[in-house]
Length: 186
Image 1 (cartoon, one colour):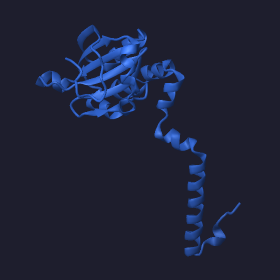
Image 2 (image 1 turned 180 degrees about the vertical axis):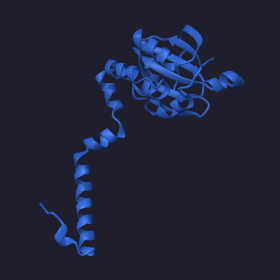
Image 3 (image 1 turned 90 degrees about the horizontal axis):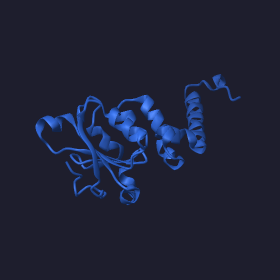
Image 4 (image 1 turned 180 degrees about the horizontal axis):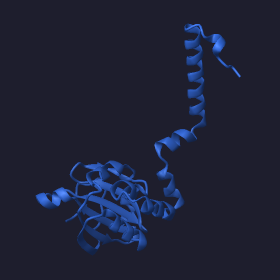
């Protein structure tokens, strides 16, 4: 199994560390984290194993932390690429090691970037592994972990604007229904 040449980023061939079928993606993700691997894993999902297809999802790592994801079957990158892998397994997994410089160019591709703990959350459904991954991620990568809800809550101006709009709407409805005396303007 090899990384498709038409992927949005290029990964040089690495040194194969192991190739096996696993029933749980958390086993591979934990091993990568524990050994602080820089390289990539190629996950071939159950359907492809049984059907003989060449569908594969590639995850790259820097010092054990997931950086990029790409699904060859759907040509999707980033968090969407993880959808091809469900938590049920089994997977054929090939794990490759690369020098940091060899994978650095690929890691500049923002279109396929994944938040560090997302593979552990979504693919392995392993909250403890996700927490370990998040804690091990460098500070500049932890920012990738912020969810859209957290980003929204961090935007105080936007929240204030929504509150003000809601207040105006409530006052308008109260006036329309003859309930202005019922409003608490305090």
